[in-house]
Image 1 (cartoon, rainbow, N blue to C red):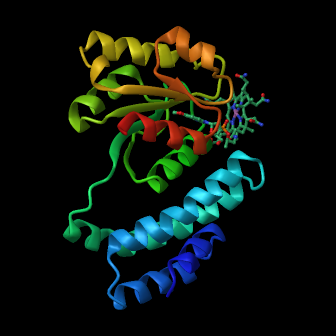
Image 2 (cartoon, rainbow, N blue to C red):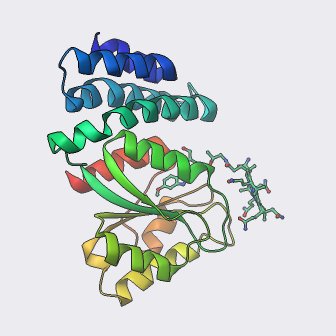
Image 3 (cartoon, protein in one colour):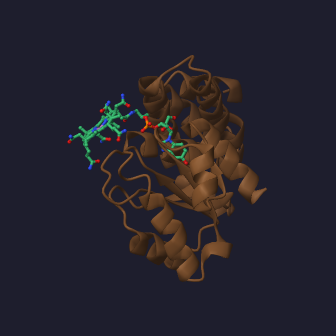
Length: 209
Ligand code: B1M
């Protein structure tokens, strides 16, 4: 099998092809790392770029992510055996009072597609839970999503709670969601904002580079 075929299968959301190609690659003696970096993540990154450019939309990304997950599930054990480390850890959640999770889930997929491990706290996550998760998981990055003008302010509460807990300087804080802007991010003391999920993964990479 060729790595390009594997990347294309992820890009096109062909989960069964991804499964077959990963199995074939492993049988040919390729490392899990090679299949991940040279195939699966290349395909996911390509779909992310197209999503950013509005050339594909949410359904295509979800289908590609499903195909990616098929591949990573097959590689998981091998990756552990090969000692492959994720490039960083992110604690992610939709803030308190907010139940929207489609965008957050896309951010999660893009982050995982970029090689991060993600601790997903779900929706309606209060400042205390973010603080506890940072203590427990020691991530490099905290990422928050908010879809309502009435909940975006709760991102500030998380920044403040992390500061009060003495954890602010240990993490980079990223914010996003439809009503959020760069100036809002600056105002609440976050480290970065991006308008879409693919650029969120790009920004996260700069934080661990
Ligand atoms: Co609600 N909703 N909703 N809703 N909903 C909106 C957001 C709204 C704009 C609709 C409208 O009135 N036109 C409006 C908000 C108005 C405002 O505050 N300005 C609204 C409202 C008012 C409400 C309720 C209050 C309605 C009611 O009950 N009266 C209620 C609130 C519930 C609550 O949260 N407490 C509510 C409920 C719901 C549903 C449960 C029915 C459902 C959510 C289902 C779910 O998420 N599982 C829902 C939906 C689906 C929407 C719309 C239609 C779509 C949102 C969405 O998923 N978009 C939305 C209207 C719209 O946008 N057309 C609307 C697709 C998603 C991919 O985009 O999440 O923006 P988004 O993510 C983007 C970027 O923002 C970015 O990346 C993604 C793209 O790449 N991004 C990040 C997101 N997080 C990021 C984090 C980052 C970086 C980028 O870094 C960390």
